[in-house]
Image 1 (cartoon, helix red, strand yellow):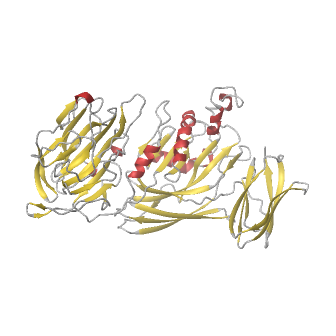
Image 2: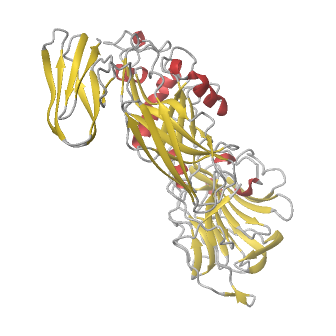
Image 3: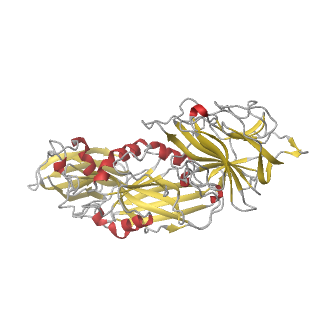
Length: 609
C-alpha cells in the first residue's frame, strides 16, 4: 500500500531542542486508497467481541459507558527503536480519551471535549485521536505488533470510543508507530457506528494530530471538530493520516469525484425498490460524483441490455464478480448492495467520505459530436500529483442521461401490480417511473472494456488521450416496437488500478450531446438531425450554424399542409439543439423542413402514439 504525502496547510513548525539537536519536522499525508498503512494489519476492525485479536494485549476494558473512566494506562514499552520529532523514545502511556504521550512522567490528563492543537491541556510529545468518551456497550484499548523487523508496526487501538453527549454513537481509531521510517499513522477504522435503535449517529468531535510542545503541533483539519469518514467494519475502507519526517513525496491532493457504479435490471423487483433511494442520493450529489448504471441480462426482460450485453456488460459484471442485482460499487471497492428488504444502502455520507480521501490525479476532459457521421469524440488530459507504477488503466464510458419507455417492460413488477389508475395492485402509482424511466444508462466503453493502459507516472507528468465512438446500436432493442424517448449522452472517464480495481479519479464531461436514435432520412448533406425518430411526446432537432443568421423550422403533414412553425428568427453561430412537443399531433408521418440563410433540408418524422 502506497501513501500520498502533502505539506499540511495548517501546520506549525517551530523548532525545539531534543538531545542536543533540532527537532525533526513532520509532513502530513493521507491514504492513497482505502486500507491500512502498508497493508500489514489484515485483521478485521471488529472480528472479535469478548477478546482482543490473537497476539494482542488488552490494556483497558469496560462493559458499559457508565463504567468508563478517564485514566492513563501503565507505562508501556515500544518493542522496536523509534524516534519522535528527531529524538529516541522508548516508553509511552495511553489516555482513555484517545491519545498517547511519550511524556510518561506528566500528570496532565485531559478528556473530551477536544481542543485545537497545540494546547497546554495536553502533555508534550503526544499523538492524538483525542475526544473519545465512554461507549454505550463498552469498549477496549489494546495493542498489537504487526509485521516483521525492520518493518514492524505497533498499533494502539481505541475500540470503541463514544460520544461525550451520545454514548450510542461510537468510533474505532488506532494510533500506529512504524519501525525504521519513524512514521506515525492515525487510522480511522470504523466510524459512523451507532447502537441506537433508530440508527441515528451523532458525530464525535476529535482532534487529530501530533503535539510536540504547547506551541508546536501538526493537526488534521478541521480538528478539533474532525469526524470519522468510514462506515464499514471491514478494513478495506479504512483511511489513515500520516505524519512522516520524509518530505520527498510531498504533494497536493486533488478534489475527488467518486465513481458510483450500479448493476441493475428493468425487470428486477429489488432494483425497482432500491431505485428511489439511489436516484435521490445521486441527484443530491450531482456535480460531486460520477454515476453509471449497467443493465444486466437477468432476472427478466430488459430491452436496453439486449443491445449491450456482449461483450461490454458481461465483462463488467465479471470484473466485479456480480452475481445478483442490484449491486453497487463506489470507486471500484466499497459496495452498497442492498441486503434483503433493506433498500437505503447508498447514502450521501458514503459518497462524501470517499471524496474526502482526495485524489492523486486530475482529469480535464471535453467532448464533441459530429452530426454528419453520428460520431462522439472525447479527449482527456490526465495530470499526476504522485508517482505511480505501471498498473493503471483509463476507461471511458458513453452513457445516456435518461431512457424513458412508454410502457412497463418489467416481468417482476408489471403494470397490474401498481395502484389505480395504472393497475389494480398495491405498489404506489408514483413509483411507476422506476420501471419506465432509467437514468445514466451505460452504452459502451471506449475503446474496449479493458481500458487504455497508462504509463508509469512521475509527479507532474501529464498524459493526453483521445477516444472515438460512432453510434452502432439503438439505446433499446427493437425501438419501433418497444418505443422510448431519450435525453443527452455524456462521457465518463476514470482511472483504475488493474490489481485492486480501486478508482483513483473520475470525470463526467459536462457538455452533453445527443446521438440520433434511428435511421436518418437524410435528403441532402446538411448538419441537421432529428431524434428520437420515431417520436412519441417530443422530438429534438440538432443543427450547426457556421455563422449567425435567420432560421426557420416548419412541420408539414403527408398532404403538404403546414401544421406548425417551430422556429422563425435570428440565431447565433454554433451548435443548437431544440426540443418540440408533439403531444397534440396525431400518429403518422410528417416532414420537418429546416431553412437557414445558406442551406435547406427536409426530413421525415414519424409520430407514434
